Length: 399
Image 1 (cartoon, rainbow, N blue to C red):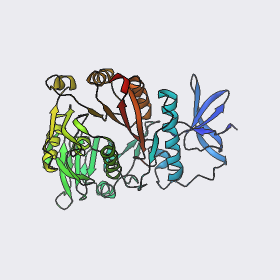
Image 2: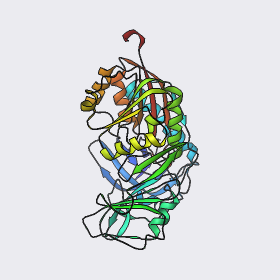
Image 3: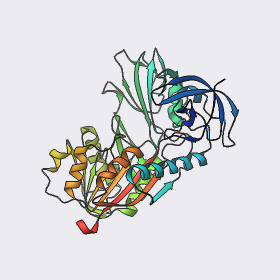
Image 4: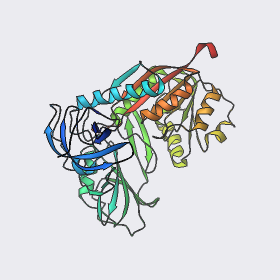
């Protein structure tokens, strides 16, 4: 009987122990627990395993509310209460920033007020006519018709089985009115049951709108936004409004540059804090939405551009005293980091969904910028993911 004691959690929420003189990662475990192992796999420097049974359980352990918890793998912290989840994420962010960016203070944690049903978007895979997820670790397909972290309007839509397709991908969004926006990508034939009696904003198949409109409108705080089916938009409206408040209380100046601006959410939230707002985004549909969103929110000092950042900026004779970046999980590429340093803004605001790439990128700014504040937000309860908003100011002696 192979057993191990769990000492702590790793950065993906897996339990860490020691087994045959190597680290072992055991999912769905907590510090202090003793477990009997199954499905043990050895790699060059570590093992992975699953729990066959518990010898000793933690007092912090909860019974997961989701029936797919053991097979889906998405909500990998649902076996523990929200208070411990938040403590774990807070300590994780601090540890990563200390180890990789030598930042030891100025980190604040922002809690979420909604543990379940908070996501306004879901991406589902279709396999042989069934919808669900692929497990991140095993890559096995899991048929799911009710996800506890997704808005219930989306769950109700899934249960109605209105989309008929054998294989492909379905993205479903919902807005403040409960309207559903669906996009399907598939090489198979796609058909629909009766949509007229449902609250459907639009249906898009392989980038072609076949029902309603390819967009809808949604709110973050007091701001209203047009969101196209393929545009980036924050999946947690409540926590996104917290990001707005952080930005408004820390950023003010003349010219703001919003990189990776999407539909313009972050820049437009600062319409009263800057004389001019400039947004750059590669996706043209998102920029069209951003321009309309400026009008919707009575923002007449915003200028949005679709295209490569370098190509756009070389035609703008503007000094940006503040730059906001909200890159994908992979963080900033070297070209963008160098561009920001070349522009020499007074302030940088870095919005990140991965503390590792955030720490990596901050090391490139350390010589010229001080880290003023880091807010870690529990944007994704029941998962190990965490959002960070970091404010940097240019060092006085190199201005």
